[in-house]
Length: 503
Image: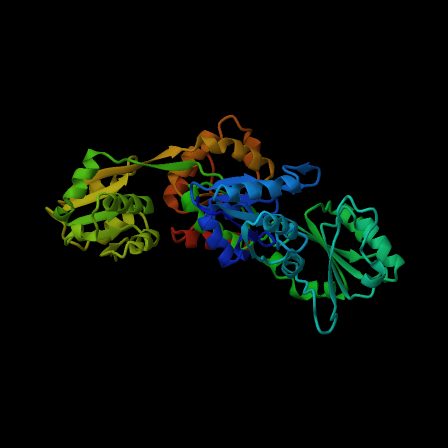
């Protein structure tokens, strides 16, 4: 029987970019992933499709499983011969109970490894513009749990010693903040000592409250700061005014709905999150390949086509994947030339190690591609156009007028993603700032999903469109886009959104 193994992984403080390469590699190979409340669910995207994912999160008032039950679960899955990734927020050995879990695994003679994570004790203050050490302010640092094990009869925290340390970082201490402050002041810490309390650190919903020991409780109540939050106490807090960088990002805290398919959304999400946005993926469309006899016949006779035209990334991926599935490779293209509609399709094509012979001029639309073909003799040429089942017909019609023989081959269709409706309703209640549309299909399907939802929920939303065709579809539904990309690409769209908020 295959021998199991457990990896105790630190997932970092929340920002999905802060997980380690080693942790990512294990997640990609694990049979079972057991994850906590504070571990960013984006990490589950790294898992293989058939991985078993088990949530064991604990937050105030709600424990999915007790620690003892989690220990038993790790042991059980490992004894089944599984590779188990135990994903824990922050670092597993810093108030993460990783030591307890490792003890139990060792007791059962189960193989395990520890993969440290970036601790929130340092990362969260850094994202709030507060270095926990600085030559001019502090040479001592203490990291303390804000709540100890509930079965302890008395605290083991030495507040007398802590009051002499220059920087204090309390984790999980918001609920216990009044008691922490009372004991620090009682043991000699000045009431004027600067304090910062940071909620949801390293994430776009990060919120930072400043004060001193004498008034921070009132400030925390005023701003409704709740767990998860970190408390930083010391003179280093004063540096926030100079080096607060994360909360100054151009899209910081903006709540943006993305309507692309989940497979396509990642690049857009990544770029918006780099600018500080909080992204909600609400796919309104899903791509369904059309694999039939006609498709197979075309793939068997590819070399007869003088040109193959791709007008979307989806068509490229489906086309070449099916070619590969048939046991064929690029040699079957023969001398066929390739045309693409824009930079995004060009980049996807180049992932298959093919450079396009022609790309749309100026604007990345069918009209731009027609313009590019105006300088090329295509009379009596056989042209293949693999595309969506429902698409604009201006390109094949104009090429026919130039004397070309066009073979339109539907290889996929976009379907409405009805399962997103419940999530859409929930997200609209959080009062997002913007919704992004990257195609006419995303617009049409969004308004189908929107049926039965109060129109007032769209009242204060800004609408962003990737280009004029998508914008026209929006107008047909009675909404004028506030933003339209000048360059009809993801990069162009992100730049337009950034400029909109920087005005």
